[in-house]
Length: 118
Image (cartoon, rainbow, N blue to C red; front, side, top):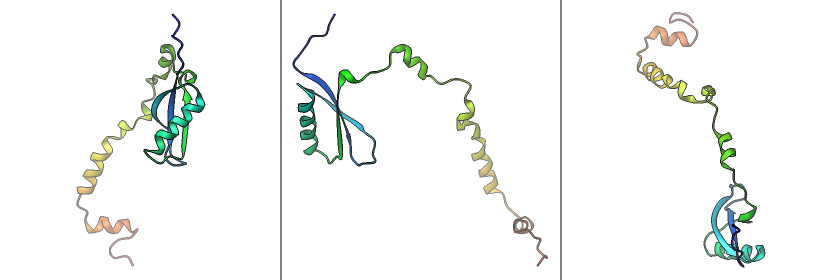
């Protein structure tokens, strides 16, 4: 069944607060064409917050992944080496190391010499 044709189109509005910040989705709006959609987006932002860039995109031009394509986003199970959970023992080891009492001989050995060497 075909979607009902209307006078208005749906547009998605994205903005950027600074020249280096990422685009963020702000809202959707209905407008008869892209020129009016840009004007409506600008009017909305000029009253609310400062932005350096606004993008207005017709919703029909945005494509999402199908259910079949979404399956390809799942991680492979053989990539455990990329996770840092294998280093959990280091916190306990470091705590033990910090609480250890050092004697004078060991501390002087760090400098590369013994107590009586000059």
